[in-house]
Structure formats: C-alpha cells, structure tokens
View 1 (cartoon, rainbow, N blue to C red):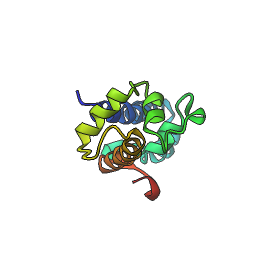
View 2 (tube, rainbow, N blue to C red):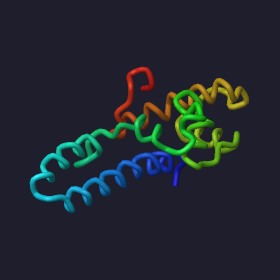
View 3 (cartoon, rainbow, N blue to C red):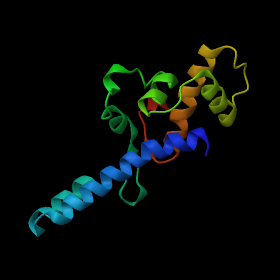
Length: 131
C-alpha cells in the first residue's frame, strides 16, 4: 500500500467511523428525533460527500500540540505513521517530487502542500489556503 493511500485511509477512515457511529445513534433514537439526527450527519461523508479533514484531524489526541497543518512530519506523527526522512523521501517520490530530496526543508514544505491537495481532490473539504 502506498504512503498516500495509508494517509487517506487513516483520515477518511476516521470519517467513516464517525458516520457509522452517528448512523447507529440515529437508528437508536425515537422516530421524532431521527430526522433531526440524520440531517446533522449529512455533512460527515454520508453518501461519499466532502469530509471536513481539518475538523477530523483537530479532534485527534495530541492535535493541539503538533503543527500538522504546516508540517508533514507532524501530520504523519498525528496519524501514527513513520515520519522518518526515508519515509518522507518515499512519499516525495510517490507524489512526483522532482527537486533534490537532500534539501529536506524544501521537500517537507512541498510534501505538506501536495498531501493537502491530494486530500482535497479525494472528497476532503479543505480551507483554500491549505489546498
């Protein structure tokens, strides 16, 4: 499995779990409350709609102590993934990075933008400044 696929699975898997949890709660409610509940879950990937990636990541433990919006290392750490230089070089290769991987700062800046763009392209709702 590719590194990007693992990232997407970890993020969109959170959304699927949240949707499944909300759906099961809605089915346990009385008929009067179920219409209200199903309306509130529509924005959470029901039917493959956009997923609020930022909200999902922000809700993860340790999110407030990491700079995951701007740092690929912190994003990978937040997702419980390998954030080593070798892993980031592999991700850069996978995503088509053409510059030198020896300049890790430039590569890391490119990677976080590329990953956020890929998430946006895959039903992830993202703020414009992170696409």
